[in-house]
Image 1 (tube, rainbow, N blue to C red):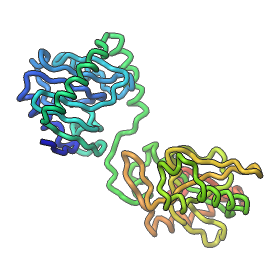
Image 2 (cartoon, rainbow, N blue to C red):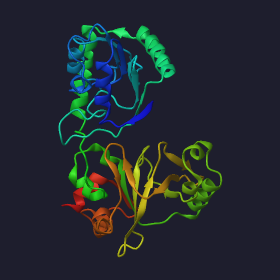
Image 3 (cartoon, rainbow, N blue to C red):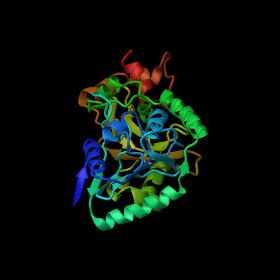
Length: 339
């Protein structure tokens, strides 16, 4: 039997496996509040339940780990990233951590990542998983009071920096931003408002890139997107890996227009040209996709909103403050739009 499980189905499936087992081992990197209850880990299981987690990242709630240590034999492994729930009768393997983001375990209104997992009872697979877990258990380290103290410090620091993961119901960019404006992931969206197009050198460089793209680019970006790539001349230091661009053409300042959206990609591509200018490459995309938030389009009304504020983007408090154009992160642009 092989069955697919969503994050909502994992807790019940794991609890069923535990109830039918006299032996179990979980190698699950991250544990959050409420995970034990959701998975059906009860008092009296310590004799037959082993758990390996990873407290080095700061993504394990130390309070949950302390409670878990009363109900299971727990070790830590600094390289663990697996999510394996094993018993002799079946196993769940996939992407769901025993955490708020991996399981639906904490209250209405808080949703985590969309996960994927497989449940199997195949004897051969279960035997392989058991052997893998046995080797991992041998490498893992018994938890000390110092480990818990360090994990607490890391957890506290992570909680201060991490925004609450919220379900964004809106599917257009500006509306979604207005729903959760404090999320730092919006800083990955950049409005590029430009007054001039590419010069001859940059057009030539862009065409050369399309004809002979680097091997690493070909491995990650399909040819259709490479051939439709956009170039941004100059703007040194304005872009980073995994940024998204809203392209705003203001060459005619009386009739600006939002051309579309583009993705920088996992690795920033910038080409140093003979004239000293840098050309950044971006790949057109119908939507802006931010992990954990969603995928967003700009509606026609939102494009009009952006265009109606181009004068303020470029001039600020003085005329011609940005004669060549300007790059603004989305929160910066929204402060102007919603002022």
